[in-house]
Length: 112
Length: 158
Image (cartoon, rainbow over all chains, first blue to last red; front, side, top):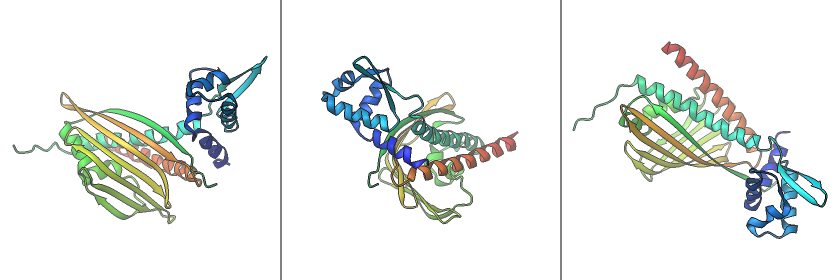
């Protein structure tokens, strides 16, 4: 249920070249050629990587005329973001407790 | 599947703390004071505990949950500048499966009588073997418990 799409998503993002593509797409839609250019990737190789990202549910593509354009799928990275947000929330709760504990305990003066 | 996909993420948390940097630092360096804001799992049994707060020192905590699962936190202190900075690496494991590994930088800056604290965590989440589902469950449970404790403390203070 939960594990399978997540496995695919993390697998899709496990490759640095694919993460570079996702980063590129996070600033707007792009063609295969535009996505391949920064890393000097050959087009068939870029198409293969984009296929993995598409199967992983991270990007979607649309063909207009002869050009295929890729874009980030809305909410695709929500799961990873949720996970990071969970830890951030745990830190913030802990720091609420830290602030409270600091107020309860007296400051200790160290003798010079 | 033998692959263990990984995901990197970095987050920065900035907080103003009520007290001097010396006071704030003690809550990281003193095990009793640190326990007051990090110890939040009353029903977990502690099965191992070590706290050696110095560069090269280790902090270890292992617990057993009421369901019999083992949780482990292991930290390695890389850099300690009293009242100013702490850098440590840590990993979390659940049932013998490593869930995450992180580098944490704690920066303390004096601002009048208060402390500005900046905590940066550079995390690697390891998601193989269904660990992610357990991780999410565990974090949410822990967070619920934390939220309850904070709420209880807030109503005590009121």
